[in-house]
Image (cartoon, rainbow, N blue to C red; front, top):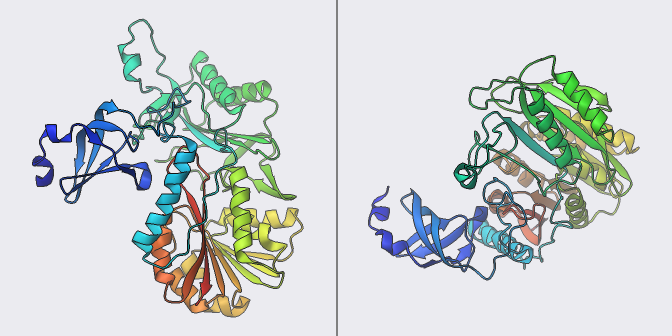
Amino acid sequence: MSKAAKKIPAEALRNIEIQDMVAEGKCIVRHDNLVIFVTQVAPGDVVDLRVTRSKKNFLEAVPTHFHKYSELRVTPFCEHFGVCGGCKWQHIGYDTQLRFKQQQVEDTLQRIGKVEIPAVLPIMGSPSQTYYRNKLEYTFSFMGWLTEEQIQDETTQYDRRVLGFHTPARFDKIIDVNHCWLQPDPSNQIRLAIRDYARENMLRFGNIIKQTGLLRNLIIRTAGTTGELMVILQCYRQHQAIEPLLDYIYERFPQITSLNYVLNDKGNETFHDLEVVCYKGKPYIEEEMEGLRFRVGPKSFYQTNSEGAYNLYKITRDFAQLTGTELVYDLYTGAGTIANFVARQARHVIGVEYVEQAVADAHVNSEINGTTNTEFYAGDMKDVLNAEFIEKHGRPDVVITDPPRAGMHEDVVARLLEMRAPRIVYVSCNPATQARDLELLDSAYKVVKVQPVDMFPHTHHVENVVLLELK
């Protein structure tokens, strides 16, 4: 523990009023020239604190006792709140969540970006606050994590073979889930049916630490716009029990459009480099947006909030100000969803993406929609987007960039400064790295519009769309 923390007697961290919400969903207290970040609280709570981590310039703490609860609090609707690692803002009303997310975007752009920005437009909320996700991943564990109440309950013997979610900040602790409010049915029924079948038939639930057993992971994808449904079962190894389990699920839930399994004995659950076996149905499902069909395979990326994605893409298209004559570069295009979404309003769209499978999906999405004015290229963005590429395809009129959470590589930013496209529309799932990139672009571009978009209610995550114009 740092010297600063040692100087604080325990009684000094009693009756502390939580002051504000900051990045990553944490709250902040400033006490005796120290900054303390606190989890599991809301602004206005009055609490006693226990320091869990100490750094030179700040402390991290958790509440040990509540003297007063904030007026911003609401009753969480999920029985697993506080134990499950998701939906950490359920104790705060949705309007308040949006206000904090708006504040987070404004503060981050000003503090990190240090560039002149216009008044930030009011945040656009998610059309749905529950059952908004089209993809969830569950983990099997032979030794499920018990809550304190379950441990103290001597009248019930709990089955430790579980299929659920990770507890906060723990990869090896899985809680059983009765009902999840994130994905519409039949997601919950499918998960519970698979868990119960595996228990009754003595199938081995996975050991996450040793990576042994049979059942590893379950992914359920639901297409809200078409009603199509995909199930992907990950197993550690081949076993004669896999096919009977899949047959049972397909018979029990005939609405499943695509039933798949993967054999994965790697050190992690990613399977982009592994074969996915389509056991029943089609090897994909489809989403729909403004008459466009987007094919989503087991390895495809698609925005996890389908309704929210439509809002996000409309804002992106509006910011691009397309008239039908523009050459558009769509960087980090993924499966080409934005590229195809704006193609009808552009002369030509060129998408670039690192993941080869995603580029294959982008080609398919253009083909099934009859879109003929798109091209897609696979490779590392900083390598593909070079002088020869720009000379061959032409200087873009508009650049749309939607990078991962890490933001854009500095070489990509340098290339944007060289290209000097009249407009850049920057879509980000991480305002902090977006702000960093905006500062780098400031030598040639000014920020004209800023529009936050909430895609993940009851979490601290927020999307942000920025329009930049050449100075």
